[in-house]
Image 1 (cartoon, rainbow, N blue to C red):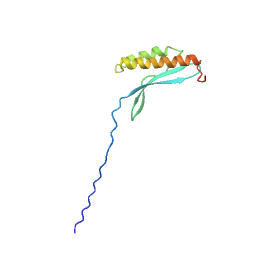
Image 2 (cartoon, rainbow, N blue to C red):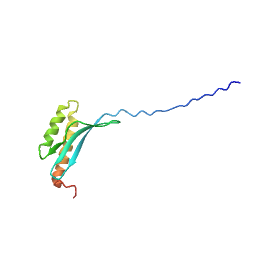
Image 3 (cartoon, rainbow, N blue to C red):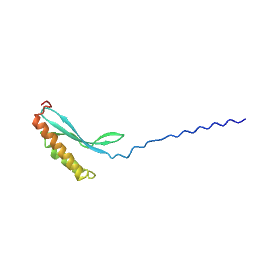
Length: 103
């Protein structure tokens, strides 16, 4: 008598949708300076620095960031404008607070 065992399992693998890398601004909020850097977040891998920190008001961090963004030809004009506007908002917020996070 032959015993035949049949093992058959069905596995469903969920493949996540392809996610494009995201560009993010990173900030160091200090009393006398604010640092701004650009990173690329790659889903599943982590963060890749694309620039050093640019410190304002020591130097014109906004202008340095703009120059770095223009170097990266793969960054669209729309993305560049959004990032520069975000940097402007944070610099203005820092200036209004005098470097202090408390209100």
